[in-house]
Image (cartoon, one colour):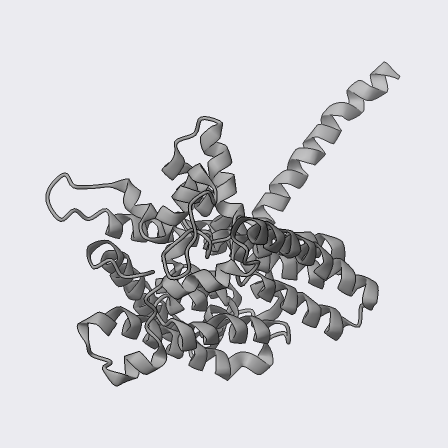
Length: 371
């Protein structure tokens, strides 16, 4: 018996090691997941660290703006007072700052924890997006999809200390698992997205459409929906107990000085509206590309785009560029349309997109534009 174990042990170990290497290579391929992930971080960090004056390089620029709200939640939770019409932490959902705060309480420095978690979840999100691209895009377009996903202006928030990468990871992997008919796992992964952003329920809508189109039945529907429904109900109960308003994450946004589409069109070239115009143009261009390929994409992808992008255009244009990225079918459509016209068109489109990313990274730091 001992001889058999000695003979088979090294062989089994080698097989397991080979299986791990194969899984890693398939899940995180270098050219289409790891390399674009690295390039995006070089571009954004390199641009945001450009100093006004010599020696003024501050890595904490990666948690500017909304990152400061996440920092407060990570260290103080939702303990601040709430009064309607005044800025507060309540528009933000808890999972991402809870993870960063947990790392901080274990001794890790706070802002590197926030940024590091964002980077980790961005890599996981890209792996899931790459899997969906291989399944649903033409062979020539699939390798470009992740590049357009991370080298677009709105992708800046997946480099900064924001919850967007966590949300996107939950979204894409919930869809991957649902397509594999692993309904309960998909439901629990969707709950991650639900706990990451106030509009995380969009993932549940996409799962419902997936269940319906695959005719998986009521049990699959319950498995896909139940984890997010329970989590959201618990969160609303907590908010009600703290503030008296179970939907305070929506009501608290009344304190934000939003630029709506009517404001933009009334004076589009106003200096105050320059950021909104930037976001609007990139969002509209993305939607045009998506409209050209909407029928070639899975039915579950349409509500992701409509429910993610259109509210931002109607209710608060600043930030629309990031919603175009969270609606991943949009950059996928851009890759599909441009690669159909040849490698030169795809390269030119990616260069324009990357230039927009550089511009927004610079303007977030030096003009306090919202990403």
